[in-house]
Image 1 (spheres, rainbow, N blue to C red):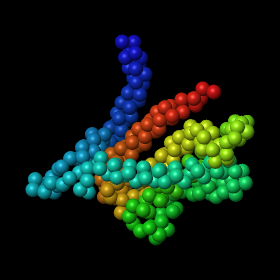
Image 2 (image 1 turned 135 degrees about the vertical axis):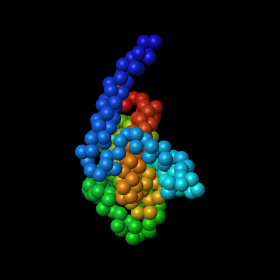
Image 3 (image 1 turned 60 degrees about the vertical axis):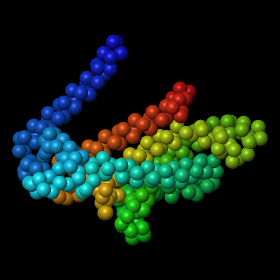
Image 4 (image 1 turned 120 degrees about the vertical axis):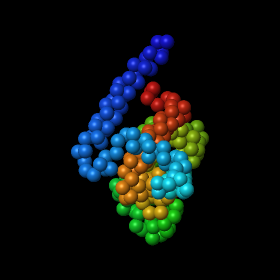
Length: 273
């Protein structure tokens, strides 16, 4: 009983803040401050757009023609397609970023040579890549996935590099003195020691990937939650666009919770040293 009451007390401030935000939102939508009125849909209108995007519904005011969700896909299907693109891009970013970060940290000369280029890529807004990626790979998924890879791999590589630099040198020397090769030291000493930093870099990379998904799906992005958010905005379906934005944000929060849980499971020692 005490545990339930403590959970309720902990959740109450969040519920109150959410209620105040919804009330303020509803008041602004009803006040007519912004004209025309469709530019400020109420929370109920956004909810209706969300439900409509996940159901079969008639169009054109009649009952003869029924459409499936939005753009012939349910909203959750748009989300799944975007998650698949982001998942594949993050897998590629891990395959590139983790070995690169380990090598940059372990081989100092290599790190001094390659590090500035990784920093350079990190500083470029992913939107800047869209033009030549489309020219190279076309309008389909390949260009979108590589755009997300370019957004995700620098933080993974740099987080791995920082993790390697944080490993005590005597631990590495101890492994070498016991007969471990450089490759074994890299895989079995530095790899596990940098795991918390890799997961932290992955969390940052997921955030970058999600903030880039709308840009990645600007062209031929349907199905896709970012493409739907962009298209609905251009068609003045503001309620649907806001629903897509909320889904993108809530999904990002859920992914971060999953990654934090994974970090606690795989690296329970983090923060306890």
